[in-house]
Image 1 (cartoon, rainbow over the protein chains, first blue to last red):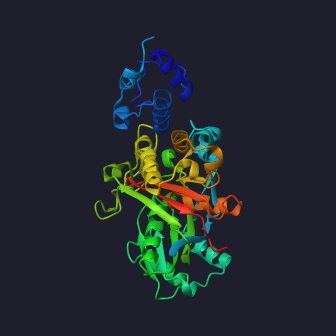
Image 2 (cartoon, chains in turn yellow, green; image 1 turned 90 degrees about the horizontal axis):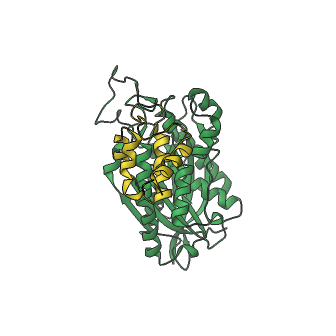
Image 3 (tube, rainbow over the protein chains, first blue to last red; image 1 turned 90 degrees about the vertical axis):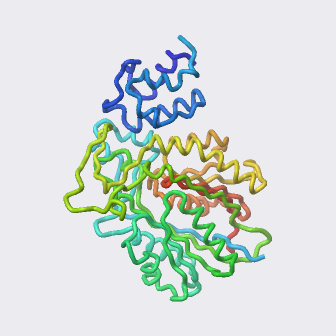
Length: 76
Length: 342
């Protein structure tokens, strides 16, 4: 899966069309526990990667989340 | 050979309903449809003012005894699981023994577990029957997490429902064990991820000390309320539970193909969906039954088993794989060979 496809998938899953790499997650009302669960499930389903939730919950932006799965993503 | 076997199960839900429509009116970003889609729950039942988990447990047990006509004087063991006891002391099981008019020669005690409670309880009932200490056990669950939940904490209020359940386990003659093997485990490093932090001896509740706080997701709670780190619980489940199932199957010397029913703790839609896929369990074997009552913690597995039995889906000799997991972290898995007397 490419980086672009991963972001597009998250936009659909979270119903968050404006989500981008620089979107601030910390303090964002939409970045609630359910959204975090959705991201964990998405990474598990699409990449087979179990995200560390402590790292996920430390992420400040979507770019930080992408770093957690970076090795699994191809460029593009 | 003398073995322990489940004879019957009953449960009781409080009358008060909490629907997704009511919840969505409190949480503007969560529509009723979204709550259903994400949790798999349409409504949950919650205790009324003055009603406790023990009241639900009492109703479930009375229902079981009346339905089966089992002579209550023959009950010699009452195991009661709750995390919302009537009092710090005495043990709620003692109060239930008296309310249920069980004989004073019955052993009765509480144990404190959440979603892993049913496999643990079966392990204790079987052990005491195998040891000749008891012959007729009531395994009773009563939980009322709604007592701990802040009305404005959607992360938990959308999931949990209150319930009581009762399971009759008796000594019978069979060719092989009916309950077991068991895989039980614990990882207390996750204790902080599902917790009521204040109110016990470690952090007693002091007058005026309970300030409401709003978290980054907009959920409101005090330290005397239930807190759940949902993503962390999900991570624990993903990492732990498939391995537990694998260990149980190996211990039993059977494959998933030889299991007729898989009954997992009914946590929520996404956990069940993930585990079903991961464990490669076909729909017809994978029991799901919580949309109308929510995650009832210790009672989810017995509620599903009762549903399977009463809808004619459990046949004598069927192998049922159950797994409970959650608060603690704690987990328990076991096989049940369904073999009641009638």
